[in-house]
Length: 197
Length: 197
Image (cartoon, rainbow over all chains, first blue to last red; front, top):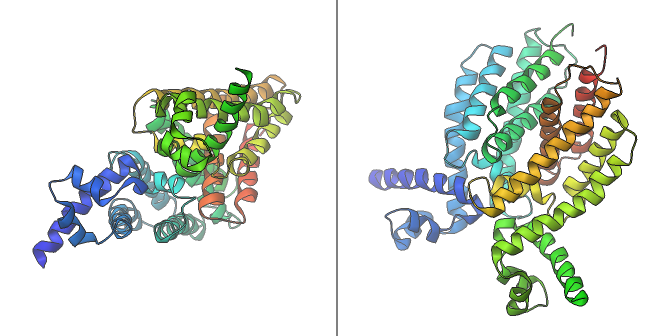
């Protein structure tokens, strides 16, 4: 049982990397067998179906996102400092952790027309991410660093746009200025939210 | 010959719609045959290969983008008015023209790890789009509406991020506030660029 769970986790690690390159929708048990040393029947025993595999990959990627991005942010003091850690870690997550970049981003544009449980799960994760940004921006309002009338959902929308533009500029265009531009955009967003601006 | 060209264009129209839903990488001659009344051999006669089909779909979509977004902007007087037409038309293009939304956006996140001529063509189109925004923002600088020190490439990066966030919020999350948030983000960007701000 314990060994089975370890095996499952090792496979999920590989499956997440494959999905980040070929797209979550392209991740089938057959595809995964071709990228690992496991047989299709062995993989079926772990994951039952393509859909179940895709859902478990999303959950696995989300756990890694929480460890690498959310947790470090939440262990930073409330306010803009926390927001900066969230943004910095997110840029790293967007392009450096998985070989194909952030799997939530690519899946967001891949699966938007494909109704079903995988899309539903993705929507929940994406809503959580946007709410997290809004909540963390809210701590800067609570600490008096940002104006009381800052619309934190709007802030989240705009910060998310910066990260999407960064993913695009960095991974598709290989623009050497991608990170610098993302940081400048973030500084404008933060400056506009500061009290007295 | 003329009839062949008309047929080719009618097929490309359908192919672009299919690609916007299943992803450009998922568009094969077999897929297209399943969505049209044409035989695979008839489609092969028009397009020769999957890669050639995908390249022609990109070119076809780009022509439509030029007609629907670029041309109306360029026939508007230089300056912020032109930029607003570009932004407004682009929001429409991003989500309403093709059944699966802007094909350049989904292909950008789908093909970023798939080297080859299709990705290369996509990169050229995306660079052109970003340069177009920068150029149009530059007309607002030239007209004295925006500060002389506005970094128009940075402006393009941020405006592109707003459109990406809009595509995501509108098509994946079905957020009813998506367009309103995009417009507010654009107004902040424009306000920051205005002379005297």
